[in-house]
Image (tube, rainbow, N blue to C red; front, side, top):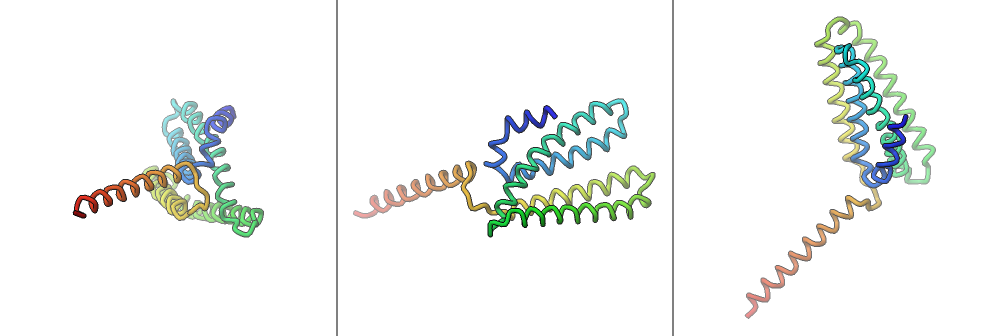
Length: 176
């Protein structure tokens, strides 16, 4: 709980300014927390330490995921329909969780007692999850300018000014 407060205190401004990156970080940390919990079962002598690290990762996920979800929902609510978009987002998440439950009920009897098979499926599903979330975040195009975009625009402007100056100098040299 304290880690949530400390993370929110130290990073809250960045969550809004760099929403897409923090959305991916939250997804990766969530998957990392699952991985750590699976490892905790394999290493019982490190159980407490691993579960503490998993809990720390999940507390960051709770803050970063919640804050970035709000920003994304506000972006997607083009007709001032934040509640509608948020409700549909929640329904979509519920559908994904139900689908995951059905898949786990199908796969569980098949992989029970086969540790290697569990890790293979876990790796495949985790990689698919991260790839899908990467593509989803990449497809977001916010209308507002955050610090990162402003820096890129400033660099681009400086580059254009340099090219124009070089072009003018080149023309002036070859003019006479």
